[in-house]
Length: 320
Ligand code: AMP
Ligand code: TRP
Image (cartoon, rainbow, N blue to C red; front, side, top):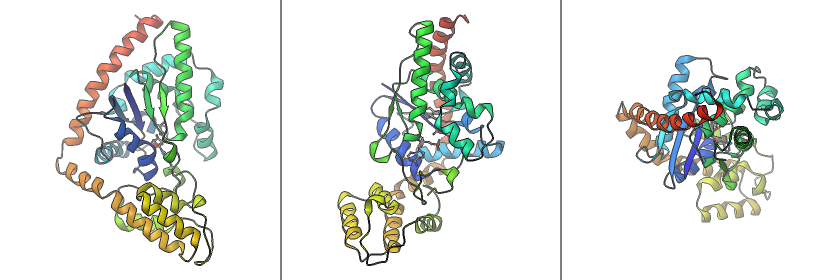
């Protein structure tokens, strides 16, 4: 089984990225050949500072390693170290119906948030399909927001197979039901671009501040509260044990505890939960060349697979 996923280097990683994608990706690395990449080509649709793109790309790789990616098992690489993927994106674009892309939620969302509608942003799902298909991927661990992109990938694979004969496998999304959409401090989907993120590797003061600014209703301390609609409770249940979660639920329902206290409790748990990752990050940072070495090794392996698949594709479509 081949497992593949990508993450954009558009800024610091947040706990939505961690629970939606990185934790499942780390869990899957023992189940087959895992390939994970830093999607720098994708980030170009929104990030126009070259130094920042380079720095963010290394940082995302570092953070992913700190979060448990085992470079002896999984392949970690930079998107742009496999430029063949842009060739495949071109080939896929020649069979992609406009309507399929016009229906893409993420494009519509980005426009609604005022991003300029460049062609790259519009055709992003085609590049993402190429990312997946070029490694003969079986399983793609992602958060729910990426589900439609995997459906588009499957549609494009089917189109290619119908047109040129069996070239591509059809990948399956792997979306964790309990963490498919992690809420941010305003209760909407956590996202850097909404400014509602809690970063994994921010300092203690910063994380505390973010947690303490989680939006709540204005119920009094004594009032019973609804855990099901509470961002505090939802985040707490991601990082606390079963017993601790049950205990917090009871205290919500019973009343008598204010949101401020629940937030403090959430902060303590979150900080503790990510402590081993922070420690590992410090250790990795001591070896100046570690991240670059991992990425170089990753690029080599990713290229081996991509070259094989591209040979097949070029032959099938008549380029060789
Ligand atoms: P991105 O930062 O958009 O590149 O996202 C990287 C991965 O994290 C993708 O698989 C997303 O689906 C996942 N992800 C991002 N935000 C969330 C969230 N709030 N809840 C669950 N998964 C998320
Ligand atoms: N589009 C994904 C995101 O924004 C990142 C991504 C790019 C990806 N290519 C991919 C994820 C291929 C899975 C597979 O989160």
